[in-house]
Image (cartoon, rainbow, N blue to C red; front, side, top):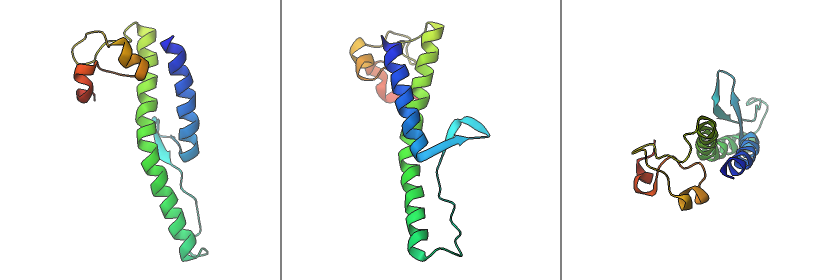
Length: 116
């Protein structure tokens, strides 16, 4: 059940990530924001400002998506290894309600602020 939810979420996140970034060729776990390659000399000031603003927006959107994407991949890996649903802090089972709300949760509710 959770594997299906995670696989669906992974596809959605990958689509969202591709709309604002691309995988770093030197580190496939890392995503980089898309920047419009514009000839600074040939473009006017407004175009340059728009491109900088779009890059900054993509950067702001990318980080939380990348974090969630990596958490979902980790959760799928844990399912394969039989370690899914176990709190990374104290090794207790993660509450079903928490996994329903966030199938990629890495900790139980008591330790949710200690993740990472």
